[in-house]
Image (cartoon, rainbow, N blue to C red):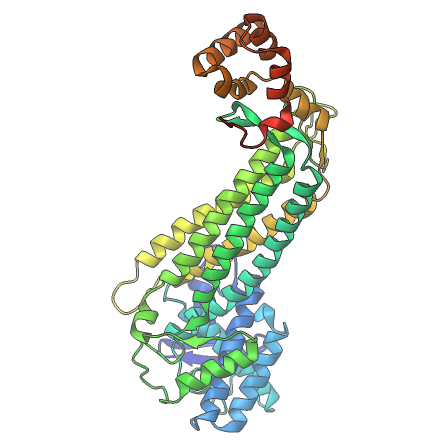
Length: 466
């Protein structure tokens, strides 16, 4: 195996010459074995880092501190990585000490060695193009790392919002399709008053619409970066004009309007923007889990449950009970949502640990945040495609539950009062007799009045007129 020698201030190491990362990445590989998930497992993060590094090189070229030949080759190397090449070279564990320095150096070393080969040199010949002196020029982990997290998060939130729109649309289709199917409403798992299956799905769609608005607003906080802040926000070792140039160039590269933060000192140490985004994701997860669980309950049966809807049959449900089919899509969506909710706690705790001028726990934030966005996007698409799109309704079962319910006695309240209505409900529960029959027997109302009051469609809207 051919090797090359590389060194840092700790010492010298033999590096496999087939790899494009260098000595600092190698040390991180030895030190960090936390999650088993590496940078390459998050290609949108690798892409964001390459976009940041390309923008930095071209900005340094524009302000006159980086030789054009070096800047152009760094940019070309970044383009290859943006296109998906060399992904296997991003090998550092996502969770690491050092506030992301290992990730930044993994990127610097890979980009530098790709650029060296483009220039006709060998990997490791850093006298021609150096990971720190050139690829990292005018930068620090403390601005490139959080900025890359934001660029990556912005991109993935955009994907998530598309998935949410898809789910909302499918729910709205069902709402219209089922607008005339009467069903029993329930509060605290007990009979309440009638509604429609269309109302149920329309409410679900409203949840998702509200969350789309919240996540869209939260995504905007990801567009404010601290590129040019360098170590702690003062901009040491950075050209005065670099800050403006790098954000403009990055915006051109990504197609997203990225802007410098108002206060670089604050932006370098504060990670509340990530807490804000995670909070919006958590809210969406809570609502999505509620939808999934309601679907699971409405689907229960097929003969001894509610049986109001039929979720698509995806796979056999038991190794011992023939014919059993479980609501596996609703269940897996719920589990996914719980992970998002748990990740929010991780993000909150890591953000709180931002002592003085830097938050050293940003890798934990990145890992949890990326996982939340990815799993929530998958959950949204899974529920839309594998549950909502193909589910069917059981109108007869829905109507039967309404007609047999004691809860519809509520409709008598405006006409005979709460006490008489409660007495009817008590007898109906004890005897199993219909509430209308008891009301008629007691002479509280005529049959015509009872039939009109208990007509299911008449109980769906405000109706008390004096």
